[in-house]
Length: 113
Length: 114
Image (cartoon, rainbow over all chains, first blue to last red; front, side):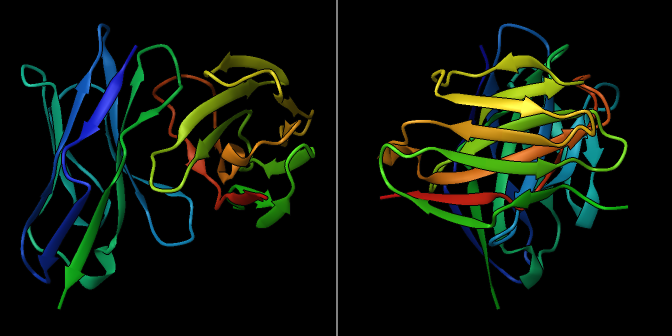
């Protein structure tokens, strides 16, 4: 079975500051890794995913994430955030060969002007 | 291209009642997955349908059941509602059921059980 731990439930940052949202996972099998964003009163939107290859993955809206197999982490970063990045961010894993997503608890990113 | 749509947007039921939630998948997608997102939590996988057959199920009791129709739209049925069933129910569709395929989520149905 897989599990995902998002280490921060809330992250407040100032506009134009960099941000890192942390995600660790646990699995006995190979997994794929995902970051989704959920804006208020909306469904989930895929930011980026790691399937294979380069461990640095670039996504939409200027976000990127780095897969670290030895530390079983997949942290999300953005060098300069905007007010519009205010949302809930979810890290998720799926076992290779199965589409079921296992999500973390989410991290609420709040951008202060 | 139309995205994933869900109906209704909101629903209020009382304990013991039954509810049906609906999902229209994105055009060309034959796989639909359902997730339950309790307040303040991440979504939890309920089950997946691929070409009208159940293709995987999470840790939910049998009173959670589903259907997928020939046009690949889907229903989630919950019988004997309990207070803990109050949640946002999300539907996601994908081109195929392969784990590399992106799942596209609908806006969800918020169910309140009183």
